[in-house]
Length: 419
Image (cartoon, rainbow, N blue to C red; front, side, top):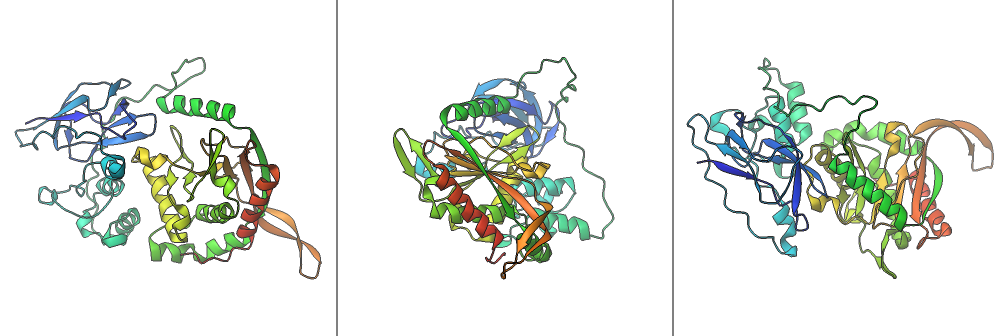
């Protein structure tokens, strides 16, 4: 019996989506939970998995078209006489707010399929990990999971691939994608993507809404750079997570926000909303745009929790696995133009936040160092330039500078345990 493929309900406030790419063509075999098509909404770009195994029988809505949620966009047939799962039940009505998180979750995903007798495997892993395992022809049942509750992580799969001694098997067939867009040449008139339109709209709205002012601080990161170089290998072996600089910046920001809560607020008309927690928006640059997933209640996480949360959000953003709830509710945003070589940036505030911090590149520079006895000397230090963009309607320059002074002091005198 054929199974309908529908435009998913990606959130209570989302009523339509645009199909940006079909990853299979009619006649192609598909596996349940295998990426089938990509959509764009006013919240996120997402990769939608197949609801059943079989053959893609028909595409009813072509690329570039926008349809209402629950619209049938394709049909998966039995394929080669094999039985297909029964047609999915009609989507349930929108869940109440208290159950929003559960309602937004995608259908339960089975483990990656390699042999017919493994289709019902219950190995705990994420869609990203299963995709990676398929690409490397790895049987997840043979991988020891180091994540919470024995969950198989991305690093577990990579380690398994690196250390296995069995002869390599034939590579899986490449994913079938729609025809690539023609190369852009000077003089071409190319329509903006849905994400680009939304980014443009929100940036203009933010400039019109907030009175943007920026201040920049130079921070000596030598202590943290040396600490990270010394601990990163052991940190990854113990935790399965790669040690990056971002959790240092997030943690220093949280400490400063707790001392200056006005920087962690938002405006509601003529009223100021002071937020109980720090929901840190971490900007992620994608090949097709920019998105700001949110690390909720970051003030309640230890350093390892920050690192794991940041890594998870970044991976799901790049693999189009974010849900609308993942990009909502930020109270303060951090963006990192330095990863591309920028010395510093002047970021636009992410509404409804009242401030955003830009992290420049960490570079070695000569600096004047004053010893305890007052003697000056010149030394090579690892330096970063941090820029705070703030809304002058509510944050004064003195408060912004005092806030950044705490961030600077925390980073330069780092004393917290890592891992």
